[in-house]
Each structure stands twice: as structure tokens, then as C-alpha cells.
Length: 230
Ligand SMILES: [Zn+2]
Ligand SMILES: [Zn+2]
Image (tube, rainbow, N blue to C red; front, side, top):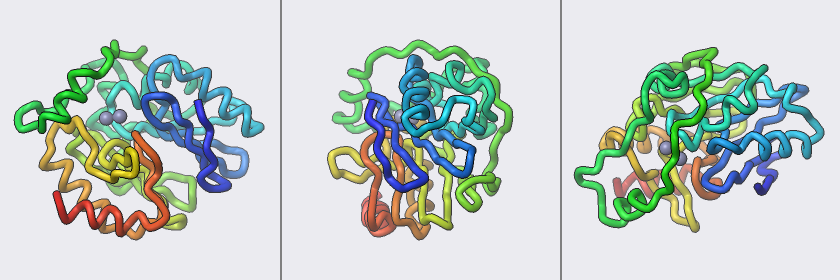
């Protein structure tokens, strides 16, 4: 696990298959996504490296219901408020399985990636303390706005911190090997493209993605350039 400082208040946790992000503010920590099942020790270690403890974790925001984004919730969030969009909350509660991508029309390169994914059994379910909806404003980062971005999954969300020109985009944006793109494995690819376009209209200096490196410094231009090709 690599811990990368992106801003004095923001660290990226590279958890193998994907990223989680830790926002530090006063005494409170906010975690965005958790990685796969078994990532709990890495998350605890990252928090302790920053001089805090798991008890300082005030809230965990899940960008969407795919197992690699909330798999460690049951390991780390005993005392934190767990927040998930209402459409994906049943997945986290273990009431239904994660959404699968639409295979019809999927390009060959993406299908090859998908067919070579390691199998991932469902994580230990977790409670959801707060179901999120578009337009909700959360109490960190000067006001963190929830933006519903359906398409990757029905309940995918982005978290926008206008005061920092910062966005957490989940899997709707990917940035792998310098290639900024619409994320893969979408349940509704047309809706995902529309959600990407909505995000590209924001004024952003940095976009934190589920897979790959943050898009920065001029994130808005990069997103708009990609959006013109969708
Ligand atoms: Zn996903
Ligand atoms: Zn993912």
C-alpha cells in the first residue's frame, strides 16, 4: 500500500486494485471508498502513519456498490457514519449483488479486461447509516456536494468540493497510464457518458479517480477534451 499526499488535507491510499482517499480536517477523518475485502489493515496503517487512529474516522463515503470499493467497510467502520447513495445501498447491506456491466456493445479490449478480472466473492455486508441523494451537502471540505452520476452503477456518486476545486469521481472517470477516459464496466454506458459530461462542466483543478492517478492540475480541460469524444 502506498500513501500519497495530494494536498495537506488529502491523501491517496493505493490499495492494489484501486484507490481510497482520506480527507483530514481538524480532528475528523473522512474516508472515500475502502478497497477490496482485507484492505482494513492497510487503511488502519495509513491512518496511524498520519498520527491518527481508526477512532478518528468520522465518516466513510462509498462512491458506488462495486465490491472493490466498499469491501473493507466491515473491518474499519464500526464507529463511523457509512454513507452510500440510496440506489446502491442494498448492495452494501447484502440484500442484492453488485451490478454487472452491460456486455452488449462492449469493445473487445474492455471485454478482455473484464474476462480476466480475478473472481471476487461478495464482501461481508455492512450497515448503511445515511442514504445519499443528488444535491446533498456533507460537512467536510467547506461543504462537499453529492452529485448523482448514474451509469457505471445506478447509485454511483461523485463528491464535489467547490472550495478546493476538487472532485472524487469514483469509477466514472479513470486515469490509467496518463490516459484520462470514461471508466470501464458500466451497467448503462450511455448514462455513464452523460454523467461524465456533467462532471466535465465543473470547474476543477483535481479529479480523484477509483483506478489510476488523480487528474491534475488542469482537470477541467482534460475532462472536457475527453467528453467531446464520447
Ligand atoms: Zn466500479
Ligand atoms: Zn472500481
